[in-house]
Image 1 (cartoon, rainbow, N blue to C red):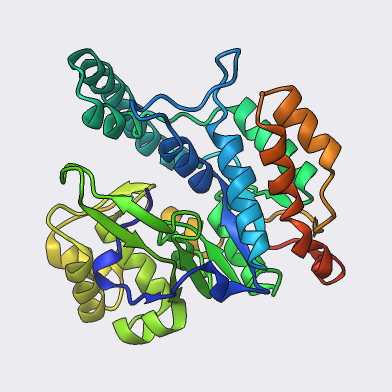
Image 2 (image 1 turned 90 degrees about the horizontal axis):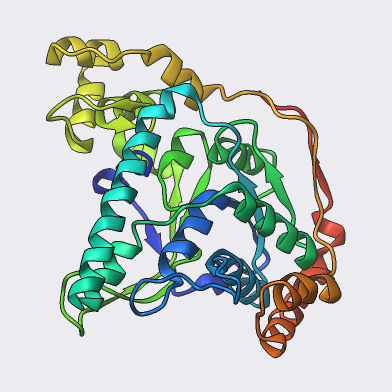
Length: 344
């Protein structure tokens, strides 16, 4: 889920994703594919499946969202997480427990015939396994869309792609991209559209639009350096640590402003945070990665049809139409062949 900074961050809404025409976005792949697994479901919450019972929601999301953005002239680079840091183990265990509990509630709601609750709970049960990740990468290869594996957190590599000029912005729902140093963050890149508000009846909806968050603007508004923003995030709680009890984003900002750094803020609250220096290093000095070549290529229709139609029974006309929409990527193919050197 990342750190919750919503209440203190300034974001600028855009009308739609066409605002990013000609831009390359470094997409948080795991975050995005989980969104697809969560949202692309049957009315009762059951994910899309092929005739062998294999989940296909992730493939549907990658295909149709990537192609629709390509038709707007928006280029995506999918950045996949590497092995999780050991300090993330507690967060991953909490997420597992939440999924298990949601699955029980989903099944109970289905048994009671409560379809609305069933779908809501089902969205919390999504599991992205290694075969699904491999299929997503195979599909991206077929579509001619580049993807990269990060040595650790994908958001860290996405931020570095931005710093090197290989991407215009990181794209994620999480604000962690800012902590990793992304100059710009685009939220709602794959969630735009009309969305029903959970638990609000059948007719309450909200219009979700893309938002642009600029790191420099927010640091100036908050009166913090990036290192101080990381310290404030540690007080609130990150994927690598529990926050200080009773400290939300606004209080954390005030504490860091008043005391200059995490240590003074913790002393003022009479609190401690284990592994604080290590957590700082995760955000401020992520591990080095090897050379990466980002190359947009013309899509391979036959390869896409084999994976989606022959293997998973997708509609051939719909797949052909979606793949053909990737045509705008060809025009920028020469410009997109860039190399990412080792970084640290």
